Length: 98
View 1 (tube, one colour):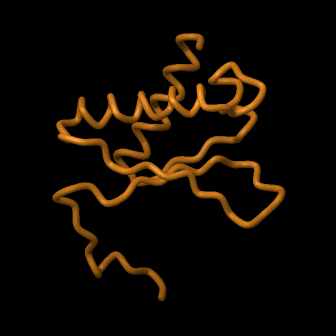
View 2: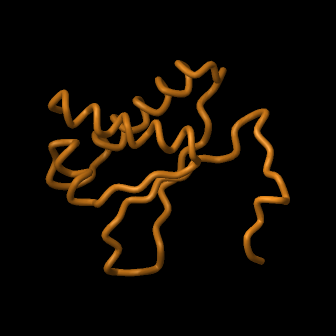
């Protein structure tokens, strides 16, 4: 993986860690990883980067990371979402709609 593309992937994962979710177009993700299809190898790269990022931020074990896949055949975005981090809480004031 080229250095500038590795930096882009890390920035997206930073956003997931800080905000709770991040999105990238599938074609861009393939470009970043330098692959033509997603096999075990590229997923391991993403997992390893995520584990490293969580450890750098002081988490004893990585926060669970999920790939959100809507029921749409035309899905153009890979959406990553993390679970609630230890010590993090949701505030009822932040509910915008039910």
